[in-house]
Length: 233
Image (tube, rainbow, N blue to C red; front, side, top):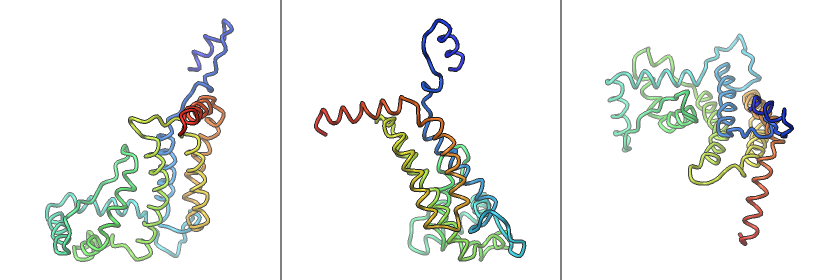
């Protein structure tokens, strides 16, 4: 597009590669989510990202991934995991794996792990030392829940902007702004996790500066609301 701008501007045709560049907002949201995950991997929970030498810190997300992998790769553990769920009167569910190329997969992995918290705790404690060392403390389970709350924000906005049969470009800037506002408000609710939220906000702000003045977004919002106003919606 930059090359096209040069070619068109030479004969006097006004064209701006920046003004004509429509970003993929779900992808931007995923980049913000990944920025949060990078910070999550550096600390087990509350704090400003620094590690207290007096406390053993674990990467909780990696910890969960390891437990899930160790259960899934062993037929004995899988059967035991299913039987524990059956004994509690529920249809057995499988633990989900987080896949880097699948958006929101880390959130879905953690949510399923928390959903099966009781069974996961039993199997981590009852099996041999290979799993026992990964058993989570009460505060670590609470941290995972807060992680999910933070990750649900980009997931919700990806869903809003990923419709296959409905135009969504007119919702891009309003949703982008709303997402940043939700995360900003969340910092007051979870002050010990500001470092995580700021990582995502920083990535969003980086792209906000690139897209806020692109006329396509303003134009499509005006057309959309004009159409609905004219049709009495």
